[in-house]
Structure formats: C-alpha cells, structure tokens
Image 1: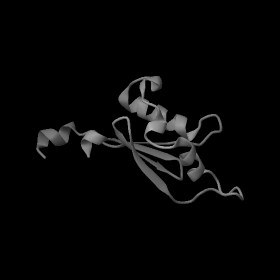
Image 2 (image 1 turned 30 degrees about the vertical axis):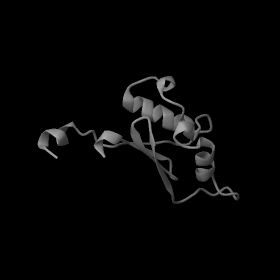
Image 3 (image 1 turned 90 degrees about the vertical axis):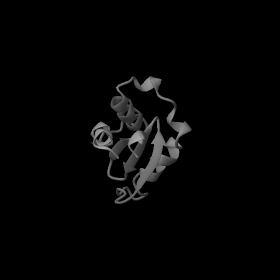
Length: 99
C-alpha cells in the first residue's frame, strides 16, 4: 500500500452504548452506521438483510438469572462497513474498503 492510500484510510470508529431500554441494539447499530456515513438512518438498507437482528438481540441479552453476558462478539458486513458488536455494548465500524 502506498503512503497516499494509507493516508486515505479511515480508522475504525467505536461507540459504547449504555443499552437503555428505549434503544434496541438494532436501532443503535443502524444509527451508528448512518452517523458514520453521514446519512439519515432511513436511507440504509434494512439490517435484516445483513444479520438477523432478533437473534443478535437474544445473543447479547442477559442470562436467565439476570446477570450480564461477560464475553462475546459478532462481526458482520452492513451497508459498506464491517460492524463488530460486543457483549459489553461496544459497536465498532470499519469501512469495508479499508480491509
């Protein structure tokens, strides 16, 4: 890779969410990617075309006894980004063109 190509690479962007009840994981992922693309979230393709959002919610939901999940992450491509979601509420996006 040339120096010019490296300077044009955008770094991964990460955001931690508190998991408030009024924002589903699906909504937070879509909002985060839309913010990275600087577009309205309604202009993105549906998340279900990339991953099953209900299964993703279930994967990171608390255990049956109410304790939090302590480890785990899911990586998938969505709307031109590699999206990494971790069990501790972190959502990281990296433009696919940088990979």
